[in-house]
Image 1 (cartoon, one colour):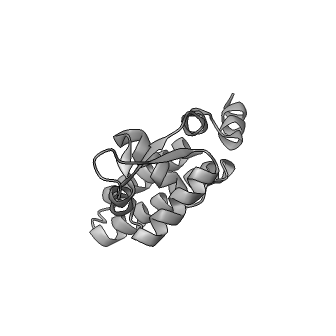
Image 2 (cartoon, rainbow, N blue to C red; image 1 turned 45 degrees about the vertical axis):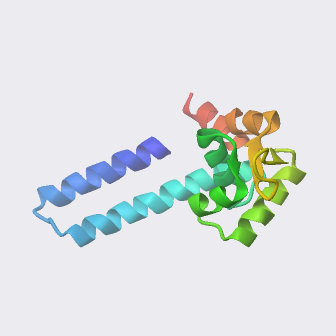
Image 3 (cartoon, rainbow, N blue to C red; image 1 turned 180 degrees about the vertical axis):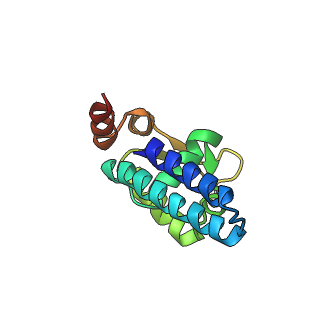
Length: 136
């Protein structure tokens, strides 16, 4: 589905330019439609994990950057201090992250991925498996 969409979008842009339509606004609109379609497709895979819209980005940041203080994660994923605290609470309750006091400053809480989170992130979801089987 993703490859078909990308091929369609690429083909559509080539047609637009081939017809002499070089209006950047129109190309931007086509690209936005493609982005929305890709976002819906990606969101379906994330929903299979049971994670909320703010939970997955937190796990992704921790996966790529390693353990971080709670107050550092919030601005990276676009969450307010209150929202990031609640998101981390949800992830701690699901045993997907650990939260410990910093050795240097007891006011700072360091958040790190657990083994369960790594398993969840690297395990293909049911919808991805179904898509792969339909392609075979």
